[in-house]
Length: 386
Length: 137
Image (cartoon, rainbow over all chains, first blue to last red; front, side, top):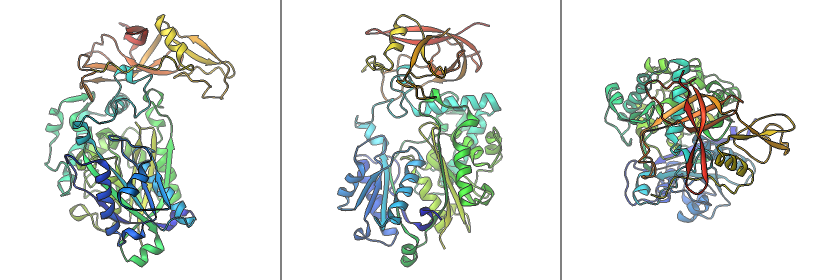
């Protein structure tokens, strides 16, 4: 038994996604937070824990207390987690589970979101080069954007395994197809492989359509005990297994592709769940770029090492396949505000509320991916509440 | 234009690295206890946590482990006069990997595994950055 066994994700919500001029990140988080509490069948008075992260585009310290104040809450707990990527939200779940088990919390609100577009236009965005820790030894060389860090891995994958730009393009095209089934996605107009190949090079080998979006958006979820969730009578997701792995921080210190933490993180999560990837009805991979999905399907064991490119090209990522990937459209097309939307859509699949992109009868859904640049991996195996 | 990012030259753990670079020498810390040569410099050995370290001069040779050609000046105009520029991870012959720019790259021929050797770029106020150049084969 683990404290994770006893918790339920009962309510999820997201704001409009795209260009939302004048909206602060915290206002987007608060809007999503209030909606998530309502979706859980709870009220403001029920929330006694706040877990959050400011996001990076308008980074703030002591953020969870700010969210609590913004929403007029006086919780026992206000905790920030900042692991990077999905690990940030997964670490909140670990914290909530421990707090609920310890009797310190009965219902927690977890909020995320950024105003990545609008903050930049206001000139108040974060200083470049501070996110991946290369201030002394990487930023002076112009290694200041996350996408350039991913490009280094994509280039090496192409060299070692023969992965092609067209295979990365297949990820972009599929993500956009999924987004076309999602009325709240930032980019919904279908694209073709030719569009991908014609898009300008950003940081070779990655083109513009290989890059995740920058969005203004907020997302939130509510966590409580399974007993409470049952009494509320709302559909919920539960945690079947969790794993994580950290290998390095700055780009030059990364191990080689096959030694990154993804496979270890996934193996730990599946082992704790007593399941394999064959049991997954859908997976959600933190797609900072198209290559992240290629690396992710390999790490999860959906294909072999180095086979992620052909796997993507085969159509195996799309709705209707055995294990579709990023059905909400991912950060490539649905929106990028810290990556919380993968977890939210995984929960929706298990609640049966994913609309046109619903996998019928989904029982097991996996949220996986990395923070930093392939430095902190995190894998959450979720199951349908019973 | 606020100028290109600069390392902290006054950090006692890394200052000898930058002082050597200013002399156009590439030096890395070597652990006296376990022999590990490592990067980036820090006050203890990441292998065994010994604080007994020496500075070892590198030969300057290595290979391209991976690279990217950056086509966009991100965030502001700091790098606008430099694009496109190449960022590479170099595997030194002494084993550690570090990140630097490739000087005068031939993009039609550049490939992972290419041999490189260290060179240095002088920047304002006493800063020199180790860079690398492909050795013609």
